Image 1 (tube, protein in one colour):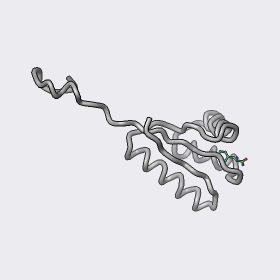
Image 2 (cartoon, protein in one colour):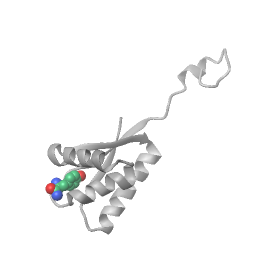
Image 3 (cartoon, helix red, strand yellow):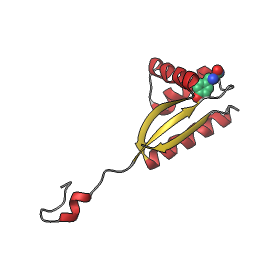
Image 4 (spheres, protein in one colour):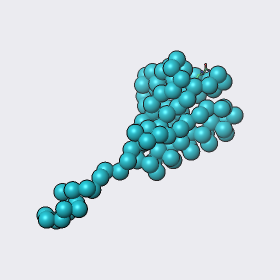
Length: 98
Ligand code: TYC
């Protein structure tokens, strides 16, 4: 399967890449509008989706931004944290295996 030759028993073990959740965590200081901007800029959400996710984080402590292969998830986390620090906000963004 998955592009391999018939009779190769090993090929049935080819797996899709592991996927990782990227999450935002709540804090008491980052402005709501900044979190909405982050969700639009780095996670391609429209303003309505971004507002829903931001409010979920605000009310429940964490919220899902997206699910990506490891390298892409890690890059999103780095970009969000760098952008937040540039603006002196303590926003926390993490990834975890799905
Ligand atoms: N709790 C923040 C506030 O009241 C808003 C906020 C939402 C902060 C989501 C971080 O990931 C976050 N200004």
